[in-house]
Amino acid sequence: ESVGSACHTAGVAGAPQPGSDALKQRLDAKGIDGLVASAINGLNVMPPRGGRTDLSDEDIRAAVAFMAEQSATP
Image (cartoon, rainbow, N blue to C red):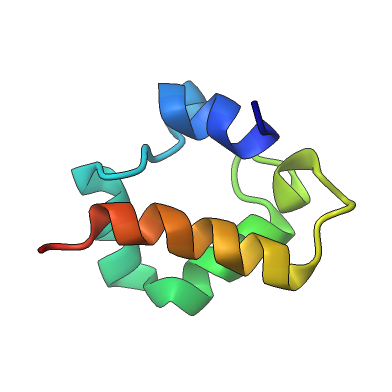
């Protein structure tokens, strides 16, 4: 299991869960670029890059986009 899914799947420490209204609201407020920046830089208790310093910016963007797609309105 990846570091990101470990927290985001369970909603640990308020991490928005894929497909949740909370994630959709954050996406609407910040946009994809804002969410990517938060993931890269860290936010609240989430460390930069979700604790995975080996991930590239493109890897982070892909993970955020994947989560955002699950929250998109069909």
